[in-house]
Figure 1 (cartoon, rainbow, N blue to C red):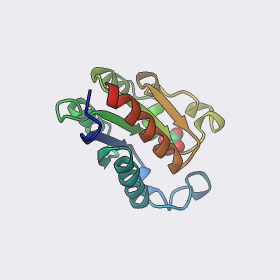
Figure 2: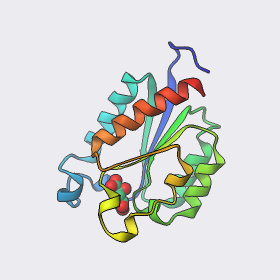
Figure 3: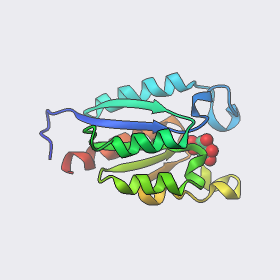
Figure 4: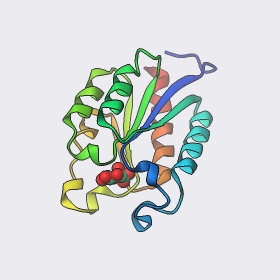
Length: 153
Ligand code: DQA
């Protein structure tokens, strides 16, 4: 358990196509850019006592390597938006199960009320919490949640 004053480390992973925020399907994902999202995440993390690293990759293996390394690198919690990998990547799901850290999954859009293939998240099953449909705000809520459970972890 970490002391109140001790900074915790948060790893935030964003999967494929999230780098296209701001131009991609603006009716679904909004008009703000990925850089704006990353900046907001950094601020919210700091407010919750975390020092955050924010990464984005379009490659499944890169995401898996980062997940596997999270504990070794000394992270206290993991936040992931796996993008479309959420719906079918058993490899990412298994990687999440490899690490004993508090984990939350976020989706900007409401995946329960879109195409049928988005309704299932195989990666969320390996996380402690899933937040969907709140846009950037979902990341803020996930960070607050993770800061509470990581402090006791
Ligand atoms: C997403 C939802 C996924 O279904 C989609 O493939 C994405 C973004 C979201 O944040 O709403 O790339 O993860």
